[in-house]
Length: 291
Length: 158
Image (cartoon, rainbow over all chains, first blue to last red; front, side, top):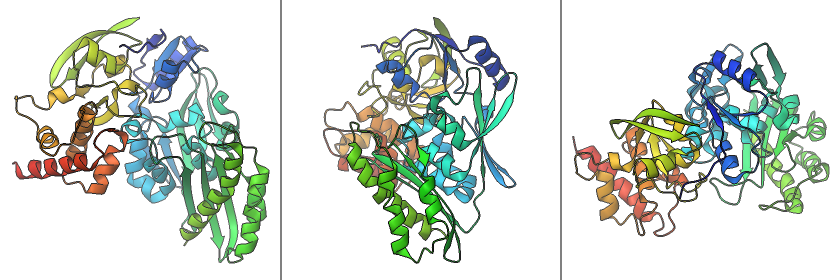
Protein backbone atom coordinates (compact mmCIF):
# COMPACT_ATOMS: atom_id res chain seq x y z
CA UNK A 1 0.00 0.00 0.00
CA UNK A 2 1.31 3.43 -0.90
CA UNK A 3 1.73 5.89 1.95
CA UNK A 4 -0.34 8.98 1.28
CA UNK A 5 1.49 12.19 1.91
CA UNK A 6 -0.10 15.61 1.53
CA UNK A 7 0.49 17.28 -1.84
CA UNK A 8 3.10 20.00 -2.04
CA UNK A 9 5.30 21.94 -4.42
CA UNK A 10 8.94 20.88 -4.34
CA UNK A 11 12.03 23.03 -4.71
CA UNK A 12 15.60 21.82 -4.60
CA UNK A 13 18.05 24.74 -4.59
CA UNK A 14 21.51 23.95 -5.95
CA UNK A 15 23.38 26.29 -3.63
CA UNK A 16 22.93 28.47 -0.56
CA UNK A 17 22.22 31.65 -2.50
CA UNK A 18 19.51 29.98 -4.52
CA UNK A 19 18.06 28.49 -1.32
CA UNK A 20 17.75 31.95 0.26
CA UNK A 21 16.14 33.33 -2.92
CA UNK A 22 13.58 30.54 -2.96
CA UNK A 23 12.77 30.95 0.74
CA UNK A 24 12.18 34.66 0.17
CA UNK A 25 9.89 33.90 -2.77
CA UNK A 26 7.76 31.16 -1.20
CA UNK A 27 7.51 32.49 2.35
CA UNK A 28 5.75 32.06 4.68
CA UNK A 29 3.98 28.88 3.66
CA UNK A 30 6.84 26.42 3.33
CA UNK A 31 8.82 23.81 5.23
CA UNK A 32 12.52 23.19 4.94
CA UNK A 33 13.58 19.59 4.34
CA UNK A 34 16.97 19.03 5.98
CA UNK A 35 17.38 15.39 7.05
CA UNK A 36 13.67 14.65 6.74
CA UNK A 37 13.51 12.33 9.73
CA UNK A 38 11.04 14.58 11.56
CA UNK A 39 9.38 16.27 8.58
CA UNK A 40 8.39 13.05 6.81
CA UNK A 41 6.83 11.75 10.02
CA UNK A 42 4.84 14.94 10.42
CA UNK A 43 3.61 14.57 6.86
CA UNK A 44 2.65 10.93 7.36
CA UNK A 45 0.87 11.38 10.64
CA UNK A 46 -0.41 14.84 9.71
CA UNK A 47 0.61 16.14 13.09
CA UNK A 48 1.59 19.58 11.85
CA UNK A 49 1.48 20.31 8.21
CA UNK A 50 0.35 23.75 7.13
CA UNK A 51 2.87 24.16 4.31
CA UNK A 52 2.28 23.78 0.59
CA UNK A 53 5.91 24.03 -0.46
CA UNK A 54 8.91 21.93 0.50
CA UNK A 55 12.36 23.46 0.11
CA UNK A 56 14.80 20.56 -0.01
CA UNK A 57 18.24 21.58 1.26
CA UNK A 58 19.30 18.03 2.12
CA UNK A 59 22.05 18.11 -0.51
CA UNK A 60 23.41 21.59 0.28
CA UNK A 61 26.85 20.23 1.01
CA UNK A 62 28.32 23.71 1.37
CA UNK A 63 26.60 23.72 4.78
CA UNK A 64 28.02 20.33 5.76
CA UNK A 65 31.31 20.85 7.60
CA UNK A 66 33.12 20.95 10.93
CA UNK A 67 35.84 23.61 11.00
CA UNK A 68 38.48 24.40 13.56
CA UNK A 69 38.70 28.21 13.85
CA UNK A 70 41.15 29.48 16.50
CA UNK A 71 39.06 29.74 19.63
CA UNK A 72 35.87 28.31 18.09
CA UNK A 73 34.51 25.29 16.30
CA UNK A 74 32.14 26.07 13.43
CA UNK A 75 29.57 23.50 12.40
CA UNK A 76 27.50 23.81 9.22
CA UNK A 77 23.80 23.29 9.83
CA UNK A 78 23.57 20.45 7.30
CA UNK A 79 26.20 18.41 9.12
CA UNK A 80 24.84 14.93 9.71
CA UNK A 81 24.71 13.56 13.23
CA UNK A 82 26.87 10.66 12.01
CA UNK A 83 29.50 13.22 10.88
CA UNK A 84 29.63 14.60 14.43
CA UNK A 85 30.00 11.10 15.85
CA UNK A 86 33.09 10.47 13.73
CA UNK A 87 34.70 13.92 13.51
CA UNK A 88 38.19 14.05 15.03
CA UNK A 89 37.82 17.79 15.64
CA UNK A 90 34.60 17.25 17.57
CA UNK A 91 35.99 14.35 19.59
CA UNK A 92 38.98 16.46 20.58
CA UNK A 93 37.44 19.85 21.30
CA UNK A 94 33.72 19.27 21.96
CA UNK A 95 33.42 15.60 22.95
CA UNK A 96 29.89 16.10 24.28
CA UNK A 97 28.63 16.55 20.70
CA UNK A 98 30.07 13.15 19.72
CA UNK A 99 28.67 11.64 22.92
CA UNK A 100 25.20 12.91 22.03
CA UNK A 101 25.60 11.58 18.48
CA UNK A 102 26.41 8.10 19.69
CA UNK A 103 23.14 7.98 21.63
CA UNK A 104 21.14 9.61 18.83
CA UNK A 105 18.54 7.55 16.94
CA UNK A 106 19.98 4.67 14.93
CA UNK A 107 22.76 4.46 12.33
CA UNK A 108 20.21 4.95 9.54
CA UNK A 109 18.69 7.98 11.27
CA UNK A 110 22.12 9.50 12.06
CA UNK A 111 23.00 9.26 8.37
CA UNK A 112 19.97 11.39 7.54
CA UNK A 113 19.37 13.70 10.51
CA UNK A 114 21.25 17.01 10.64
CA UNK A 115 22.27 19.12 13.62
CA UNK A 116 20.43 22.09 12.08
CA UNK A 117 17.25 20.09 11.73
CA UNK A 118 17.44 18.88 15.32
CA UNK A 119 17.88 22.48 16.49
CA UNK A 120 15.19 24.12 14.31
CA UNK A 121 12.62 21.42 14.89
CA UNK A 122 12.96 22.42 18.56
CA UNK A 123 11.52 19.32 20.13
CA UNK A 124 11.38 19.54 23.92
CA UNK A 125 13.77 16.60 24.07
CA UNK A 126 16.11 17.65 21.22
CA UNK A 127 19.51 16.43 22.41
CA UNK A 128 21.54 19.10 20.66
CA UNK A 129 19.58 21.95 22.24
CA UNK A 130 20.94 20.85 25.60
CA UNK A 131 24.49 20.98 24.27
CA UNK A 132 23.94 24.45 22.79
CA UNK A 133 22.60 25.66 26.11
CA UNK A 134 25.61 24.64 28.18
CA UNK A 135 28.28 25.37 25.56
CA UNK A 136 27.44 29.03 25.04
CA UNK A 137 26.86 28.40 21.36
CA UNK A 138 25.97 31.07 18.83
CA UNK A 139 23.72 30.56 15.83
CA UNK A 140 24.33 32.25 12.51
CA UNK A 141 21.13 32.83 10.60
CA UNK A 142 20.95 34.03 7.02
CA UNK A 143 18.26 35.46 4.82
CA UNK A 144 18.46 37.01 1.37
CA UNK A 145 18.75 40.49 2.82
CA UNK A 146 20.53 40.07 6.14
CA UNK A 147 22.67 38.05 8.43
CA UNK A 148 22.23 37.76 12.19
CA UNK A 149 23.91 36.05 15.12
CA UNK A 150 21.98 34.99 18.15
CA UNK A 151 23.01 33.29 21.39
CA UNK A 152 21.60 29.85 21.99
CA UNK A 153 19.47 30.68 25.01
CA UNK A 154 17.21 33.39 23.51
CA UNK A 155 17.09 31.34 20.31
CA UNK A 156 15.88 28.22 22.10
CA UNK A 157 13.36 30.16 24.18
CA UNK A 158 11.58 31.07 20.95
CA UNK A 159 11.06 27.39 20.11
CA UNK A 160 10.07 26.70 16.54
CA UNK A 161 9.50 30.38 15.86
CA UNK A 162 13.18 31.21 16.34
CA UNK A 163 13.99 31.01 12.65
CA UNK A 164 11.74 33.53 10.89
CA UNK A 165 10.12 33.04 7.48
CA UNK A 166 12.75 33.49 4.78
CA UNK A 167 15.60 32.68 7.15
CA UNK A 168 17.91 29.71 7.24
CA UNK A 169 20.12 28.50 10.10
CA UNK A 170 23.51 28.29 8.41
CA UNK A 171 26.11 27.71 11.08
CA UNK A 172 26.61 26.97 14.76
CA UNK A 173 29.75 28.34 16.41
CA UNK A 174 30.88 27.00 19.75
CA UNK A 175 33.83 28.14 21.87
CA UNK A 176 36.40 25.39 22.45
CA UNK A 177 36.41 24.00 25.97
CA UNK A 178 39.43 24.66 28.15
CA UNK A 179 41.18 21.67 29.67
CA UNK A 180 39.88 22.17 33.23
CA UNK A 181 36.28 21.84 32.06
CA UNK A 182 34.27 18.63 32.21
CA UNK A 183 31.02 18.00 30.33
CA UNK A 184 28.50 15.22 30.37
CA UNK A 185 25.25 14.28 28.71
CA UNK A 186 22.68 11.79 29.98
CA UNK A 187 19.48 10.59 28.44
CA UNK A 188 16.93 8.51 30.31
CA UNK A 189 14.64 6.48 28.08
CA UNK A 190 12.53 3.35 28.27
CA UNK A 191 14.91 1.55 25.90
CA UNK A 192 18.35 2.45 24.65
CA UNK A 193 17.63 3.14 21.02
CA UNK A 194 15.15 5.19 19.02
CA UNK A 195 12.66 6.18 21.70
CA UNK A 196 11.11 9.28 23.24
CA UNK A 197 13.19 10.20 26.29
CA UNK A 198 11.77 10.55 29.78
CA UNK A 199 14.34 13.26 30.30
CA UNK A 200 17.75 14.36 29.12
CA UNK A 201 20.30 16.56 30.79
CA UNK A 202 23.69 18.11 30.09
CA UNK A 203 26.18 19.52 32.53
CA UNK A 204 29.34 21.60 32.24
CA UNK A 205 31.65 22.08 35.19
CA UNK A 206 34.74 24.21 35.60
CA UNK A 207 36.83 23.92 38.74
CA UNK A 208 39.51 26.04 40.33
CA UNK A 209 41.29 23.79 42.77
CA UNK A 210 38.19 22.18 44.21
CA UNK A 211 35.90 25.18 44.01
CA UNK A 212 33.14 25.37 41.43
CA UNK A 213 34.12 28.29 39.23
CA UNK A 214 31.48 27.76 36.59
CA UNK A 215 28.63 25.28 36.27
CA UNK A 216 25.93 25.06 33.64
CA UNK A 217 23.06 22.61 33.80
CA UNK A 218 20.42 22.10 31.13
CA UNK A 219 17.36 19.89 31.46
CA UNK A 220 15.18 18.69 28.58
CA UNK A 221 12.08 16.62 27.76
CA UNK A 222 10.55 17.74 31.05
CA UNK A 223 8.92 21.05 30.16
CA UNK A 224 7.82 22.20 26.68
CA UNK A 225 11.32 23.50 25.93
CA UNK A 226 14.71 22.56 27.35
CA UNK A 227 16.27 25.18 29.58
CA UNK A 228 19.15 26.09 31.87
CA UNK A 229 18.62 25.63 35.60
CA UNK A 230 20.13 29.01 36.46
CA UNK A 231 19.00 29.30 40.12
CA UNK A 232 20.70 25.96 40.82
CA UNK A 233 23.85 27.01 38.98
CA UNK A 234 24.09 30.23 40.98
CA UNK A 235 23.84 28.39 44.29
CA UNK A 236 26.46 25.85 43.24
CA UNK A 237 29.04 28.43 42.21
CA UNK A 238 31.66 28.95 44.88
CA UNK A 239 30.95 25.68 46.68
CA UNK A 240 33.69 23.14 47.12
CA UNK A 241 33.03 19.86 45.30
CA UNK A 242 34.48 18.13 48.35
CA UNK A 243 31.55 19.39 50.38
CA UNK A 244 29.23 16.78 48.95
CA UNK A 245 26.38 17.43 51.35
CA UNK A 246 26.14 21.09 50.41
CA UNK A 247 26.21 20.30 46.69
CA UNK A 248 23.58 17.62 47.13
CA UNK A 249 21.31 19.97 49.08
CA UNK A 250 21.31 22.40 46.17
CA UNK A 251 20.65 19.64 43.63
CA UNK A 252 17.75 18.40 45.76
CA UNK A 253 15.91 21.65 45.10
CA UNK A 254 15.61 20.87 41.36
CA UNK A 255 12.26 19.01 41.53
CA UNK A 256 10.66 22.05 43.18
CA UNK A 257 11.97 24.39 40.48
CA UNK A 258 10.52 22.68 37.44
CA UNK A 259 7.07 22.22 36.04
CA UNK A 260 7.09 18.83 34.28
CA UNK A 261 4.55 17.63 31.73
CA UNK A 262 2.82 14.27 31.79
CA UNK A 263 2.99 12.16 28.66
CA UNK A 264 2.93 8.66 27.25
CA UNK A 265 6.46 7.85 28.39
CA UNK A 266 6.35 9.28 31.92
CA UNK A 267 4.12 11.10 34.38
CA UNK A 268 4.91 14.58 35.65
CA UNK A 269 5.63 13.23 39.14
CA UNK A 270 8.10 10.67 37.83
CA UNK A 271 9.89 13.26 35.70
CA UNK A 272 10.06 15.54 38.72
CA UNK A 273 11.65 12.82 40.87
CA UNK A 274 14.06 11.72 38.14
CA UNK A 275 15.23 15.27 37.42
CA UNK A 276 17.24 15.26 40.67
CA UNK A 277 18.60 11.75 40.09
CA UNK A 278 19.84 12.38 36.57
CA UNK A 279 21.19 15.89 37.08
CA UNK A 280 23.14 14.53 40.04
CA UNK A 281 24.57 11.72 37.89
CA UNK A 282 25.43 14.17 35.11
CA UNK A 283 27.11 16.48 37.63
CA UNK A 284 29.19 13.60 39.04
CA UNK A 285 30.22 12.52 35.56
CA UNK A 286 31.23 16.06 34.59
CA UNK A 287 33.25 16.22 37.82
CA UNK A 288 35.11 13.00 37.00
CA UNK A 289 36.03 14.46 33.62
CA UNK A 290 37.27 17.76 35.01
CA UNK A 291 40.95 17.05 35.47
CA UNK B 1 3.42 17.79 -9.00
CA UNK B 2 5.77 15.15 -10.38
CA UNK B 3 9.30 15.04 -11.68
CA UNK B 4 11.45 12.86 -13.91
CA UNK B 5 14.49 11.78 -11.91
CA UNK B 6 17.61 9.88 -12.88
CA UNK B 7 19.81 7.85 -10.57
CA UNK B 8 21.91 4.71 -10.36
CA UNK B 9 20.02 1.72 -9.00
CA UNK B 10 22.11 -1.38 -8.30
CA UNK B 11 24.70 -0.22 -10.80
CA UNK B 12 22.26 0.63 -13.60
CA UNK B 13 21.25 4.10 -14.79
CA UNK B 14 17.54 4.36 -14.06
CA UNK B 15 14.95 7.01 -14.78
CA UNK B 16 11.59 7.26 -13.12
CA UNK B 17 8.73 9.76 -13.07
CA UNK B 18 7.64 10.22 -9.48
CA UNK B 19 5.08 12.38 -7.68
CA UNK B 20 6.71 14.79 -5.24
CA UNK B 21 4.80 13.26 -2.38
CA UNK B 22 6.03 9.69 -2.84
CA UNK B 23 8.60 8.15 -0.50
CA UNK B 24 11.72 6.46 -1.80
CA UNK B 25 10.39 3.24 -0.28
CA UNK B 26 7.16 3.39 -2.30
CA UNK B 27 9.01 4.25 -5.52
CA UNK B 28 11.38 1.30 -5.09
CA UNK B 29 8.59 -1.17 -4.34
CA UNK B 30 5.78 -0.04 -6.60
CA UNK B 31 7.45 1.69 -9.55
CA UNK B 32 10.66 -0.35 -9.79
CA UNK B 33 9.56 -3.66 -8.24
CA UNK B 34 12.45 -3.75 -5.79
CA UNK B 35 10.34 -5.78 -3.40
CA UNK B 36 13.20 -6.76 -1.10
CA UNK B 37 12.68 -3.31 0.42
CA UNK B 38 10.04 -3.92 3.07
CA UNK B 39 7.53 -1.55 4.59
CA UNK B 40 7.45 -2.30 8.31
CA UNK B 41 6.73 0.59 10.64
CA UNK B 42 6.99 3.24 7.89
CA UNK B 43 8.33 5.65 10.49
CA UNK B 44 12.07 5.03 10.77
CA UNK B 45 12.09 2.71 13.76
CA UNK B 46 12.30 -0.84 12.40
CA UNK B 47 14.94 -0.68 9.66
CA UNK B 48 13.24 -3.14 7.32
CA UNK B 49 13.23 -0.51 4.54
CA UNK B 50 16.99 0.07 4.82
CA UNK B 51 18.71 0.78 1.51
CA UNK B 52 22.13 2.23 0.82
CA UNK B 53 22.27 5.70 -0.67
CA UNK B 54 25.76 6.95 -1.57
CA UNK B 55 27.35 4.24 0.59
CA UNK B 56 25.33 5.05 3.72
CA UNK B 57 22.44 2.97 5.07
CA UNK B 58 19.27 5.04 5.42
CA UNK B 59 15.56 4.45 6.00
CA UNK B 60 13.88 4.69 2.60
CA UNK B 61 10.55 5.40 4.33
CA UNK B 62 11.91 8.74 5.57
CA UNK B 63 13.20 10.01 2.23
CA UNK B 64 11.23 11.43 -0.67
CA UNK B 65 11.83 9.69 -3.98
CA UNK B 66 12.65 13.04 -5.64
CA UNK B 67 15.54 13.47 -3.21
CA UNK B 68 17.59 10.70 -4.85
CA UNK B 69 17.86 12.46 -8.23
CA UNK B 70 21.50 11.98 -9.26
CA UNK B 71 22.34 9.64 -6.39
CA UNK B 72 23.48 6.06 -6.13
CA UNK B 73 21.16 3.48 -4.57
CA UNK B 74 21.83 -0.11 -3.62
CA UNK B 75 19.14 -2.58 -2.59
CA UNK B 76 19.39 -6.29 -1.77
CA UNK B 77 18.68 -7.03 -5.45
CA UNK B 78 22.04 -5.44 -6.25
CA UNK B 79 24.10 -7.70 -4.00
CA UNK B 80 24.04 -10.82 -6.15
CA UNK B 81 24.45 -9.28 -9.57
CA UNK B 82 26.25 -12.27 -11.07
CA UNK B 83 23.53 -14.63 -9.80
CA UNK B 84 25.79 -15.82 -7.01
CA UNK B 85 24.66 -15.26 -3.43
CA UNK B 86 26.53 -12.57 -1.55
CA UNK B 87 28.46 -14.00 1.46
CA UNK B 88 25.96 -12.25 3.77
CA UNK B 89 23.03 -13.92 2.04
CA UNK B 90 24.78 -17.25 2.29
CA UNK B 91 25.66 -16.96 5.99
CA UNK B 92 22.22 -15.62 6.96
CA UNK B 93 20.86 -18.82 5.41
CA UNK B 94 23.43 -21.16 6.92
CA UNK B 95 23.29 -19.71 10.43
CA UNK B 96 19.51 -19.24 10.43
CA UNK B 97 19.78 -15.47 10.72
CA UNK B 98 16.10 -15.27 9.88
CA UNK B 99 12.78 -16.83 10.59
CA UNK B 100 9.84 -15.15 8.88
CA UNK B 101 12.27 -13.17 6.72
CA UNK B 102 10.63 -9.77 6.54
CA UNK B 103 13.42 -7.98 8.41
CA UNK B 104 16.18 -9.86 6.59
CA UNK B 105 16.81 -7.56 3.59
CA UNK B 106 17.16 -4.61 5.96
CA UNK B 107 19.55 -6.52 8.23
CA UNK B 108 21.64 -7.61 5.26
CA UNK B 109 21.87 -4.09 3.82
CA UNK B 110 22.94 -2.57 7.14
CA UNK B 111 25.43 -5.41 7.66
CA UNK B 112 26.74 -4.89 4.11
CA UNK B 113 27.34 -1.19 4.82
CA UNK B 114 29.09 -2.11 8.07
CA UNK B 115 31.42 -4.62 6.41
CA UNK B 116 32.27 -2.09 3.67
CA UNK B 117 33.44 0.36 6.34
CA UNK B 118 34.77 -2.12 8.85
CA UNK B 119 35.65 -5.54 7.37
CA UNK B 120 36.39 -7.13 10.76
CA UNK B 121 33.83 -5.77 13.22
CA UNK B 122 33.65 -6.92 16.84
CA UNK B 123 30.38 -8.25 18.26
CA UNK B 124 29.92 -4.90 20.00
CA UNK B 125 30.39 -3.02 16.72
CA UNK B 126 27.91 -5.31 14.97
CA UNK B 127 25.34 -4.76 17.72
CA UNK B 128 25.79 -1.01 17.48
CA UNK B 129 25.48 -0.95 13.70
CA UNK B 130 22.35 -3.10 13.76
CA UNK B 131 20.58 -1.20 16.55
CA UNK B 132 18.24 0.34 13.97
CA UNK B 133 17.03 -3.03 12.66
CA UNK B 134 14.36 -4.94 14.52
CA UNK B 135 13.67 -8.68 14.31
CA UNK B 136 10.66 -10.04 16.17
CA UNK B 137 11.25 -13.75 15.50
CA UNK B 138 14.74 -15.02 16.09
CA UNK B 139 16.37 -12.93 18.69
CA UNK B 140 19.64 -11.55 17.49
CA UNK B 141 22.21 -14.23 18.27
CA UNK B 142 21.97 -15.97 14.89
CA UNK B 143 21.95 -12.68 13.05
CA UNK B 144 25.17 -11.56 14.73
CA UNK B 145 26.70 -14.97 14.07
CA UNK B 146 25.74 -14.64 10.40
CA UNK B 147 27.52 -11.28 10.14
CA UNK B 148 30.66 -12.64 11.84
CA UNK B 149 30.75 -15.62 9.49
CA UNK B 150 30.23 -13.38 6.46
CA UNK B 151 33.04 -11.14 7.62
CA UNK B 152 35.39 -14.15 7.85
CA UNK B 153 34.26 -15.43 4.47
CA UNK B 154 34.78 -12.06 2.81
CA UNK B 155 38.21 -11.62 4.37
CA UNK B 156 39.44 -14.98 3.10
CA UNK B 157 38.11 -14.40 -0.43
CA UNK B 158 40.68 -12.34 -2.30
